[in-house]
Length: 173
Image (cartoon, rainbow, N blue to C red; front, side, top):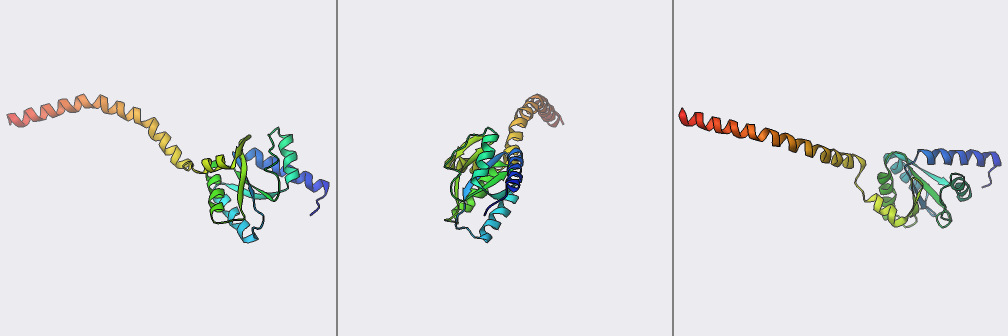
């Protein structure tokens, strides 16, 4: 389908906007995927805090070059769609890789974490990371552990003294 020069400019501006908002971009090949499948992956992308869009390779290549992002020409061949991760990169990677499992015509090509180029295997490794809330919980637990350990250490002598006094009072009584 041919687009006017003005429409191509608008599309490129939209690509730039999505890229600037994204923590990661997952590039996939979707040839042979029907509209129902595309809508399914779009809803999974929204659940992961992002968006999924079919893109034009030449326009996306131009945007990458204009934004000084390294371009792997192998990623931008054939039918290409991009999952833009606006809030949680691992969740978007997981949504894309999970969709691949039940679909032969949908394939992760690679992507970008920020402006860093990633292979399909690196995207899979990103997908294997725990979700953001779990990571935050683990970090909070690690930060709280030394403080709670300090409190226990400070309280323990008083607890021991109280136990000795109680034992003496029971013995005397």
